Image (cartoon, rainbow, N blue to C red):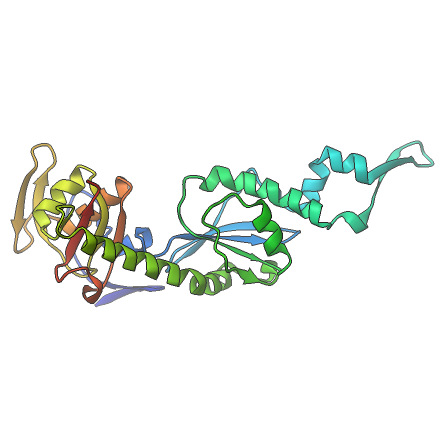
Length: 285
């Protein structure tokens, strides 16, 4: 019997070990699809993180909630665009020149603060960012954007009217070709280094190099297990044709170690592997 989650079909598998078996979830962590969506309007800003299979909103701490908040906090704008008048009771009241609230320069102030706040969150990231907003806001945001992986194509229209699920569906069509291209480039990289000693399709070699953090790119097929035991302290490794007590899935082990050491994992169907084996790797050196 299979288990179902949106976007996934999990085959029934029983494993007894001292840690969680996360192999079926690798597509969520792999090179197939993590990206950001920045949903912008003058009234609201949202940052969402998506994958091929999921979408989640990211909490924003140092980003203005809307354009009005930016202008309230901008002393130079208040000096230029507000004046005070005494009411009949002697209190000061502020009068705002509303015609200028949504001027391009004020929107740029708003977007600069958003960009600055996002920089703290995504400065070390290398994943695509898709912009969602009404047409005229896209070129203004691109003028102030400092994130190098902002996609040229975005979603036009008021994102306030779109749910997270709707944004996910619309943006995945934009980023899917990006990830397909990245995967093909990774396969080409494997083929480029195939005779240089920087690649391998041997399980023993890949497990050893994964444990030492040397894997740059790893390719694994989704429904194949290679069982065995490995002692990282001594590099002693044993492969078993059938699962034995205390065994672990070496394809999962290689993937986890690759991710922990900053490498990229691609979970691909057998026909898209760079060779005919269920496991392949490109080494950093």
